[in-house]
Image (cartoon, rainbow, N blue to C red; front, side, top):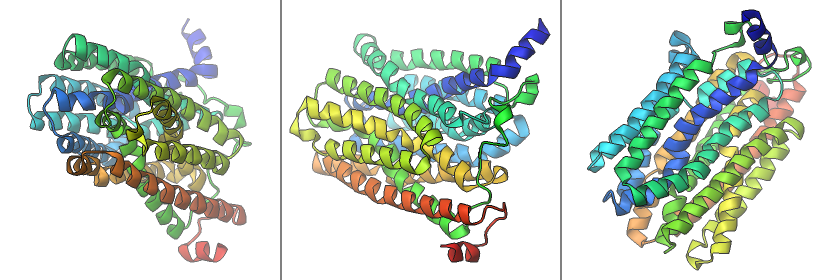
Length: 426
């Protein structure tokens, strides 16, 4: 019996790992982040927070996400991935319990801080590392499936949250989510293994390792690496702030709560579809073409969001769908970019730096939309700024990635380029 289990694991257990990572991100990156936007209007109307306080909560979450990211690699090297992510998921459950007993702004910020640390330590970075260990092929698809769960959380959680808050209470809704996430943390610990060697298995596509170009032949030159990081920092502003404030954008524009909940679900549906699509497109068409397509879709959607006060549900629904599909690139592309501009030895380091850069962008701009809304009575001016930042940063990322890709083609010998050599190659 034991040998049979190992044989199954040898051929296909990578997909079980994919499921475990998806469940993890459903909680840490979904319910506590993407899906949490459904709570924003209720935190203002029931919790008594101002727009600025609501945005500041997100800032605290982002700050501690960044904190979690800074220690993730050290935690993984000391305690292994399985223990780190399971503990992070349990901390996420604790965050919702704190939300359930919160009666003032300070406690809400404590809960947001716990949720942020859980996302930092149990989010994109460890999942990217695990998937890179378990998948030699179909890696983009596996990452897309995992990241899609952050969008699925909005689909599944938004109507459930709306129902529970309106028929039970805000605090009861938080408690139910805390119990659910705690159960998921147990499941993740039970089925996730840090690498194939733990159970005598092999990565998905283990026979393809020599044919599949999983990593760059050398690390990008320092100048281009820094420009790429700066672009990810800038893109992290709209990438994180658009989704976090989309519910209050429509609520402030006068839309009723049922329609707001529906639009959040639409955003989540298309985000989930976009993440799987981008993963496959990057595998088949290449990173540049897939990224260009998603950036254009995101810009179209975020541009339409600037017309939220027109009060056309059809326009709002189209905007939500395009934005959700385009936002798919914000998470999956970080792992994909990292694998294409760095060697295998530097992959984890590059993923961490890029993810921290994106999160730091959200931290810097986090409270600004709420401040603008308190000052002007509308979130539209903030969304115009977010659209412009998305336009500039996507152009930076595409052009810089193209230069790095060309550099890699010019120097396929596996040797790292010095900054001077990188400049000369251009």
